[in-house]
Image (cartoon, rainbow, N blue to C red; front, side):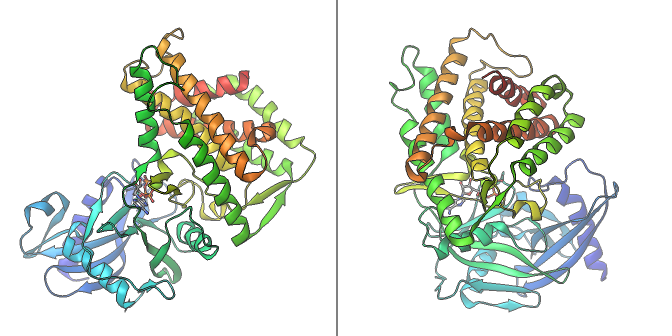
Length: 460
Ligand code: ATP
Ligand code: MG
């Protein structure tokens, strides 16, 4: 290692854990090393694409993070907040924010460049334009996405792992069957990591003039709460029509995934056993679950008792309103990586499609409580006054949109998810249990959202 790269490594070691997308917050890091590096640009601004391996003191497995390290003699003001640190007579910074380097990435994609272990690969037959300029979209995400004009979007995975990336895999599969429900994939940044194939980025169409489902839902509830005397179906921002269309989009996507990748079956006992095991693990983290564990187990036993095998297929795996975009033409589903905390093999497995439906139903609950929190109506660990008009109305909104979503799904799928209530309820409970673990670890004041839902679902 040259003295310069030792300095750079020190700077990166200090910088990396502070990034929003660093997934291992709170774990004690024993060592960071540059596992792989490839030069992307020699003249200033210099750029190297690096994979940092992070090792932990807890004996758990190492994680890998991708960083495009840019270097300039002087940083323009707009890059100052992205400094990694001075290295010799240059300043190292997070290069994705540098529009010159972002533009280079697109040119490399258009040219199908290969650099050592890294390959920019347009999808077969794709002509990538090079006259577009890139800018990073938002900052508070698990990955970093660069929008090129209003035409293309390059998602650079921050945490990378050897093996098949489900986001790319499912986008390709859906494109192969002509799906209109996802943004078409145009290219990928592929390569090797530890000698195995790995994916570093996905280029796809940018959905111009679109709004996130999560934001639209929040606006809808806010409108409802602001109108003291109107019901959910009477206010201007009613979301139910959109929820119905979204249900249809999810059902059609499920059918497309079956066309592209097939289906299978699983014994209900196996599904129930997975739920029981997740409950057992959650009980170690969330003591509040203990009093619910009897009725929860009874629900999972009911799944085990379903006579017929359950149909399974590839699913989205982490479906919620934040993974949907409303374009002028309809809904798109995004981000097919699956639940980030689950191991890759599990995320790529076949599952009942209702798992996605359950995820979306949970999301309506979350949207309502998020908005109540904004209104100061709901303040966290203790339940607010159950007589509260606002809470009553928010719950009415949730029920209305959950049911609209299921109707839309039923219309396209030919079967209503609510008819499979034993499995659907159990999947919702399973998801809410996962949420209690997530909230306990990340946002303890939100723990009462999934806990309330668990109680409500168990009571009904
Ligand atoms: P998160 O941490 O929120 O899951 P992520 O880094 O995994 O995010 P995505 O969920 O794929 O990345 O996308 C992040 C954001 O980028 C989305 O919330 C959406 O607003 C925007 N986005 C994603 N895909 C597109 C697209 N095809 N066109 C326009 N915007 C998009
Ligand atoms: Mg996302």
